[in-house]
Picture (tube, rainbow, N blue to C red):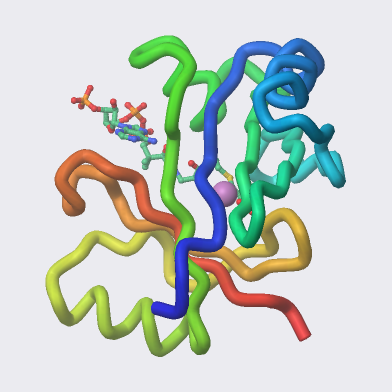
Length: 133
Ligand SMILES: CC[C@@H](C(=O)O)C(=O)SCCNC(=O)CCNC(=O)[C@H](O)C(C)(C)COP(=O)(O)OP(=O)(O)OC[C@H]1O[C@@H](n2cnc3c(N)ncnc32)[C@H](O)[C@@H]1OP(=O)(O)O
Ligand SMILES: [Co+2]
């Protein structure tokens, strides 16, 4: 794994949280993007070399809506950038992690993404991502 690519934070209201994080970080989001396949609207902030992804649910059944109901707002996942997402999926499966799905999906910010179930990673949802060329 190359580095932590972003931290994902589940929020109830993206507009309100954009204002809050702009106050916190001193700079507004550099982009907003809807990812219909995940049922989310996202905004991205830069903090030095690091990124924060805020996630608002577009529906009442998706992963962010469920997370907000069960746990409330807060850190939802850690995303790691990888060189070869397919190879990394296979490596993690062999190590006994529960990789979700058979193939990477198109995520936000021009990335292929795949997730690892939090039940197999000490309660932390992990995202692997690779830049789409
Ligand atoms: C914008 C695209 C992309 C990007 O480019 O960056 C994103 O970041 S999208 C982010 C949103 N998408 C996802 O989270 C997809 C992956 N998640 C899933 O597939 C599901 O959420 C899940 C992890 C498989 C859980 O789904 P499910 O079993 O249907 O729902 P439950 O809500 O009942 O959860 C079961 C169990 O797991 C706990 N849980 C769920 N989410 C998390 C989490 N983020 N962190 C820690 N724990 C989590 C949940 O609390 C339940 O626990 P128990 O109640 O103890 O059973
Ligand atoms: Co993410």
